[in-house]
Length: 308
Image (cartoon, rainbow, N blue to C red; front, side, top):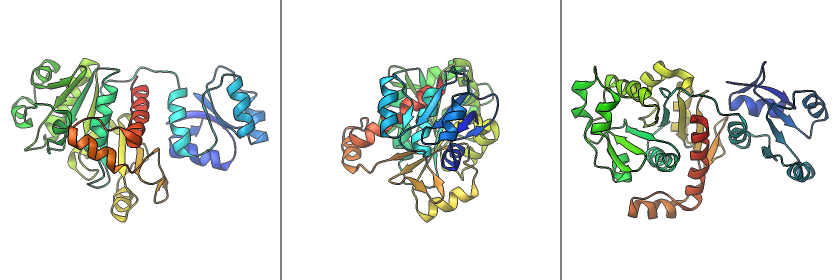
C-alpha cells in the first residue's frame, strides 16, 4: 500500500483504493483534484516537497504545463492514476528477492506474450532473468533461447546458487537470461529455490507464471505476499470473473485485454486488440510493435521504475 494525502472527492478516493493508494500518515505523495475547491485548499497546506499527482481540467492542464508540472491527468480513474503514482514516487531500494510475476485468470489471454515482451524491454535497462514456470517452452520460443529443461536442475534444488543458474541459463540478448524449457514445469521447491538464489545476484526476475489456480502461484503468494509485483492478465468474460472471485488479487496490477474493467474491478492498464502486430511478431519471433507494442513499452517502463 502507498500512503497519501487524498485531496478530492469520493471518485478520487475510490480510484486510489483500486491501485493501493490510501489516506494515511506519513503521506508519500499527494493526490489532488483541482476541480474540487476543498481538495485544492487542503493540498495547499501540505509540504511542497511531497510529490503531487493532479487531476485537472483543460484550463488547469495548460497552467500546470506552463509551470513545468508533469504528473497530470484529466481522469480520476485507476488506469490514469496508476502509472502517474508509480512515476511520481521517488526510487526506493527494492528487495531483489521480490520478483515480477506475470499470471492470468485463465488461459489464452497472452500471458507469455506479455512476459517475454516485458523481459525484452526491461532488460535493456537492467540485468534481468526470465523464468518459464509454465513448462510449455513458449517463452524460450519467443525469445529464441536455447534453454535446458527444468529436470536438469531438479536434483540441485536444495543447493542452488546464482553461479549454478548462470551456467545453465540461456542468454538470447545482452542483459537477459532465461531459465526453464518445455516438457515439464519446475516443482514448487525448484522454483522457490531459483528465486531465492537470484536474490543474491541483485538482478530482477520476471516469472512467466502459470494460472492463478496453480500450486506454484500459491507458493509464490505464500512466500512473497504483496511484496511480489504481480501482474494478472484477464479478459472480462465469465471464466475470468469466476477466477478473480476466488483468488485475492487486491495487491496485483490487473491488466485487462480489450476492456477497461473486469466485472466490477477497475484495471491498472488496458491492452488494445492488435492481431496484426501479434501475427507479425509471431512470424519473426520478435518483439511486438504497433499499438500493442506501445502499450507494452509503457508497462515495461512502469515495471522498471517499480523495480528500481
